[in-house]
Image (cartoon, rainbow, N blue to C red; front, side, top):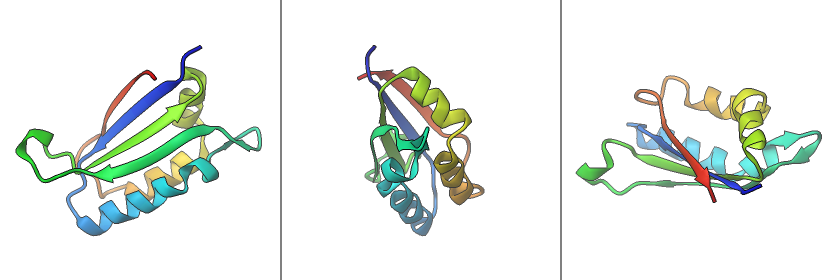
Length: 103
């Protein structure tokens, strides 16, 4: 089964809120646990360059999962993901763009 690479593109207008999101992504691989063990293979985020081609997206997160099932767990059950969503609630302009593919 191939690994899943997920890219999540956010439109976060405030620079301070972008920094909050970056800090959450720095610890995501340790914070996210499934059956008592970390399950996200890698995670990180970067601020985008100010460029009209980015469509207003200011932050891109990269997350790698061992399987689609692990990504589904992240979306539906992961407490660390819920915590990340809580930090960003009300700070993101519109829903994020989420792309995923075989790594």
